[in-house]
Length: 295
Image (cartoon, rainbow, N blue to C red; front, side, top):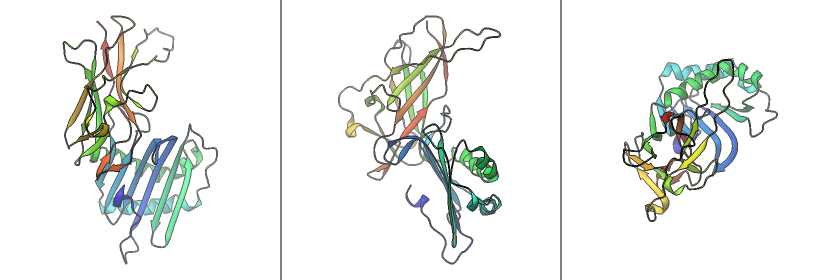
């Protein structure tokens, strides 16, 4: 995260502070990256909030990942140390019972001679309720940060153009202000939970009044492999506003005339966070859902 995440305070200014909020959940899938991983840093000296996000907590369709930066007004900055004191962050007890199904949350605050770091788990309702005023403010900042990308991408899916059969097109767009690097999605041909790119698709069950619909049964359609060796050792460099699109293999529906739900997925956590000064996209991206019927 570079200088944005550093513990810096303005010389001679006792009011300067740094507040960090981190979420880590699931297995470690890459260098310093967990399955669910995000970090928010508010630095009063920068008068800004910085976030790095590798996956949305709820796998929200259309949500970007990468880095984001949002300028914050003085009044909003001043609220945060007051909220730290209000919730008595220093008195939060240590976490108990963390496992792969829970997320570990960390709050770290530094101001002058004060340095506090506390951890708790996502299912600790008592602690979360106690910290609610502070967490609500931080989560509101995170929501705003999505509209202020620096090095970030968004994923979309659409039916392939006419004449290409029952295929989909997966598109990754650099929505930020700087170049980004990512592994060529066409090279992610592993049919694994955390290392693949393509489309997942499921038939929508017929609705029956008075009955709960069964869970969707998802199947995968991988991307067509690249012709020849991908340039750059399997990496792509996307400039701001640039889009990379690739078709999937043919979709072989189980039944014709049945409504289906499709979603694009790009998941890859491997590699270093930065290569040759260019930020690398690592994590999992999900497109918005697409309704489609096989004909």
